Image (cartoon, rainbow, N blue to C red; front, side, top):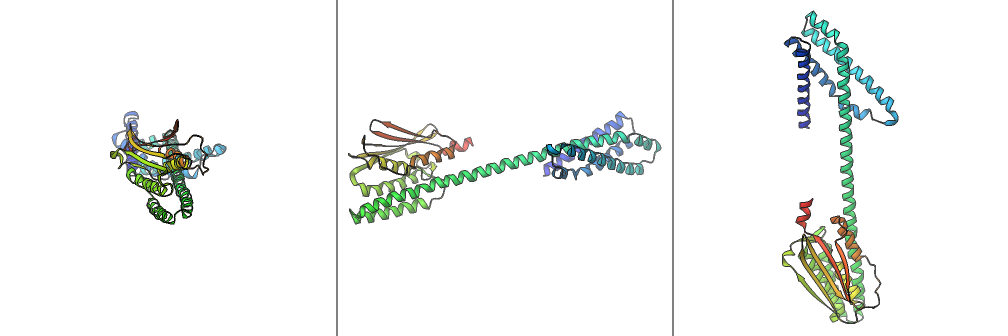
Length: 347
């Protein structure tokens, strides 16, 4: 606001300088007359322009009503110019009683009205441009705000899909264990409670890799109670990456997918391998498991990997951050998470 005011003052000073130059150098009036004429004329018109900022708001531009729009501003320009010239005449004739100057002023009334109308149209045009720019900027800001709200809501929905999906499978496991070993069912229930407490209390969009990995270890422990020695879990993690931030609850579906489609169908022992390493500007996450070729497919909701893909695309605006590979009897999911510092630098 302050900058606009200073800019406005500077423009009117420039206009005064031009008016003085025309009167003194061009029309050969003396210095006093030129100063007074230029000063009174500029100050009077500047006072009028204080109300001009409202004209663009009340006289809306519409193509369907273009004739009415043009007529309104033509009439406004003529009226403003006539009043402006009249005010200037009153003050200047009171300050300058010389008949020569007064004759000059009367002879230049038509020219002054034309100048007044020209200035009116210029200021009006700028007012409409500024109004259009402000409306456009507000529209863009609203769209960005709405897009952020929608994105945040969608991310929360995708994230919250994980917990009910996991609980459904875990409760099924507990129900199955009650028929086999009540002790194991009780142990699994306690571990499930610890896991849910850890995940539900984390409402942040990002977590440390180390924290997410700890949650996944709890998940593996829960499934270990049910499946026992039917699978083994190994991890190879670059310790320097443990403090890097990754999307919350992004790893657990990878482990769930390995157990659901690997261990469930396995005839022989399944080896689940988790690796985390730096790959260029990414954290490269790999979860792989061997599987039994031709085994019966276990039916499920199928939201795990799809969920991850959607979240990664929303968060990083890339659709190539998750890859699935099958190499003989090895199923492998690769997840590329941009390092947070690099993402911030790009933003």
